Image 1 (cartoon, rainbow over the protein chains, first blue to last red):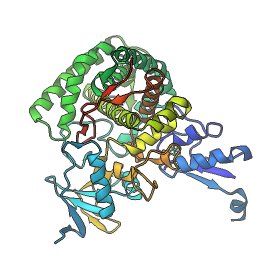
Image 2: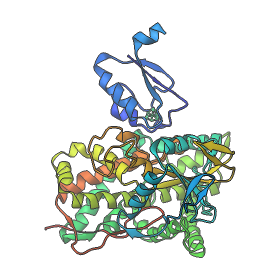
Image 3: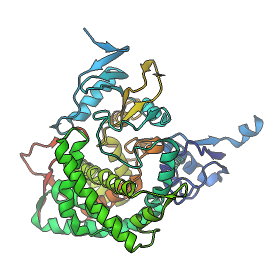
Image 4: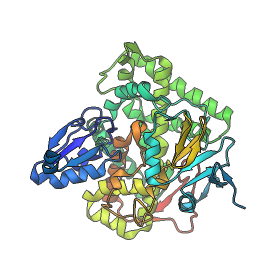
Length: 72
Length: 399
Ligand code: SF4
């Protein structure tokens, strides 16, 4: 599973990295440091990734199923 | 006969007046469920009420055509400049980049020990008395002291500072213009002195906000003195009344809901989740305004350039379509992090991380010292309209 953060949508609410500290981090302006990137989610952090995606008020985070992404 | 305006039901509900505690939330709930949109005609310009979660969020994100030229639907011409709030687009983004680092989670962490210290001092001051007006003796002093400290100013200035900020605040919702102007003048004069002192003796711009504002450059230009003063005043207006109000609602709830209070006393690690649920349940900034800058159709409502829109924050946070059983306090509720208490889009509240920290510190420290308390019997609790706050909250406990 991969997780993508839309840089244009991210407004720096900081809910995602507060939910998923092992996966995401904040930059000095309070935005998620990984914005604009697609990151691979280790199996043990899947639950965190789901929580992070669900916590974002701007809907900036999407979870991509690696398998179906490859098929497309 | 039901009136409509451009196809919307017309509402005459007045949101600026004082009411029984929770009176405004009841009005908001009723209107949201009566119709998806309303046109409210209680103000000279009137405003379109956007009320459901999905619509309010979308409204905040339409910042390119719905601008902050009107910040409050109730008083679109407040006559008080706020920065960075009044800016839109790139100008707004550039100033936010200067200020954001001071309010990032990392920066806020540096304030934690100060918040903790001040909070404990204030609690210890009231604890032996066995009672206090929680609003006047604690909830407003705490954020005022922290604000002054954050700006590098003496905490003792809070005593004369507070009445000015109160008067100025009333100006947003139609208070006496002459008094408002006078309070504004005094505050600006106070900040002017402070800023000039820093110009003469700058401190580390990484930790001292005023020094940072002085050295900051936007497109190669320094900020003007006027803009710096406006920024200081905005931070004050944004941080004091809001924190005081949030604390009032939280402590009323906890004083009257034994189980919820026990939950926090027994498991302090639940505090951050409790703060979030309180922000959802009691958003004191219950609406934000926007001015429409382009004729648009918003889900069937034809909006014209110059129209005022009400973005119903409290309405969204208590929308049963988003949060089932919305009037209940539920720890760990699904989607609670998406609540709109701090707005959304690029103008989201700059101080949201600081606010969360301040509130969490109080919940922890107060309950560690005064776990059991109640509202003094026989007191009738009320709330101020416009931007919700409790004028007083008398609490008592055993000593
Ligand atoms: S929660 Fe959303 S808006 Fe906030 S920092 Fe994370 S991605 Fe950005």
